[in-house]
Image (cartoon, rainbow, N blue to C red; front, side, top):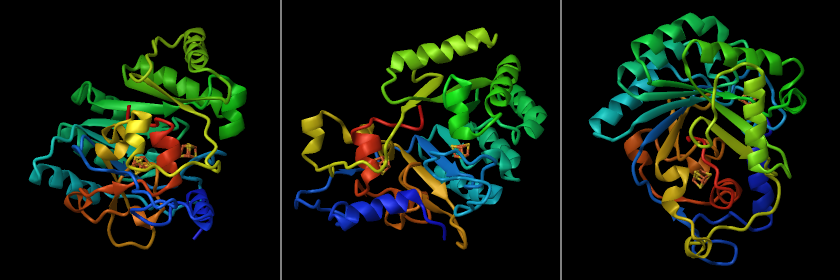
Length: 320
Ligand code: SF4
Ligand code: SF4
């Protein structure tokens, strides 16, 4: 088992008495929770292996991290079947990694999801691994028009900042893949990042200028085809969220990802996948909700620092 940030951060808070008891905070107040409203998006983590090893990868993917192993087409099929059996109103099936295109069953998985009529979102670094699938992806785009969205991570609109995070010579290659995908008519979105002290409007302008100067005909619109994550400091101290916080902060529990989403992962050494509340907390076994979607439809207590920092106080959502 490798040492993972998510676990270290959680242990660090626990040693100070925070995020310990499932239902009660350190100050003995009722911990906030989120009920599932409707499963609109089902995520699959296709496996943590990645062809890059980005400095701040929240899931710590790399060419050697296989803590979450590749999910298979048959495993995905089981969950998609369950959506039908339970008559759920799930609209979107989304895939994240690692780099999903390293999973050898990614193409059958995509075909299955598209043929079932779902909107399909794939988060990719668009750096080399996707290349060998260009022709198949083009055929999917023709057969299933408007269903497939590829969200490409471009960490910053400057090569310098992007490569500080992702490594040398990654920027031009990714940008040229974005150009190809747009030219071929793919529905593309960008996952970007604003630096500390960089206002959101400035980051948006930066991305648009980069696209314009590169001759890529993509007009970006916040929350439509670009999502910009603020630079986070996961180790900083955060308060525990109580049931009173919703009113104090004027934030709805239903605005949290775990009100509308679940994520399927398969841990190394496990026989079958399990369901987690969201894409953000992947290694904490306290957040395992069960083996099936039905079992996962239970209350989620916000008993992790990420719940406070990324969601309730930070407003993060991976699925826009
Ligand atoms: S490309 Fe994405 S998954 Fe891979 S290391 Fe970078 S941030 Fe993590
Ligand atoms: S990190 Fe966010 S989405 Fe995940 S369980 Fe916590 S509040 Fe819910």
